[in-house]
Length: 183
Image (cartoon, rainbow, N blue to C red; front, side, top):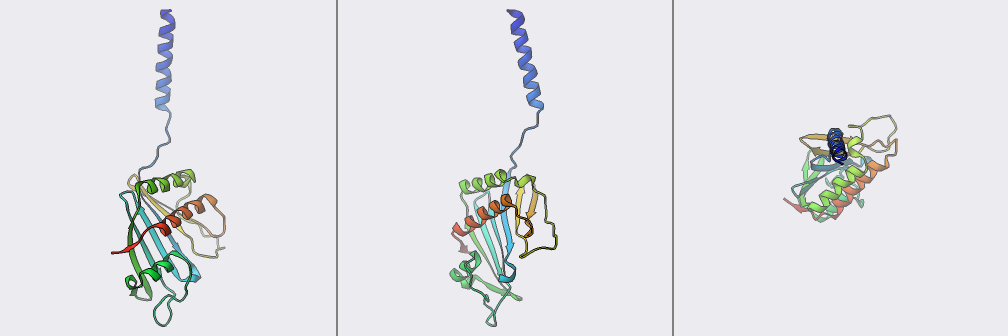
């Protein structure tokens, strides 16, 4: 009886030692998630950023302007909507019409974005972007700051990457749902 107890105790100690040595999949401490994109021929670029502290921002830039220095096209994209809502916030900077707007993100929405990154394997995706010569539009990038470092992954128009596209959609949809205000 005593021998069985010592045997059981020894087994538990051995198992706990083994478990302690096995590396755990650690969730990174994410502080910022951003989507940066450019529409190519549609003449605009944007950067949507969400921070764990609840702040959000968007930068829109139109670079295909007409003679009146207004965006040449009227599309149904996020920056087009913001230009229609806040035309006075856009300033001419060289040959570009730019604006920076602020918003907020709830802790729940930030956690959802973080989970979307993890569920779609963002942290195992290759950093950067590889150009293979076949591209219809410039790449989009997802930038993440975590644990004091930064990771940036870009897509290639040449190859379909559904997990990356799911992350981009989540960021863009939250950008569309955010209530943006001028500074």
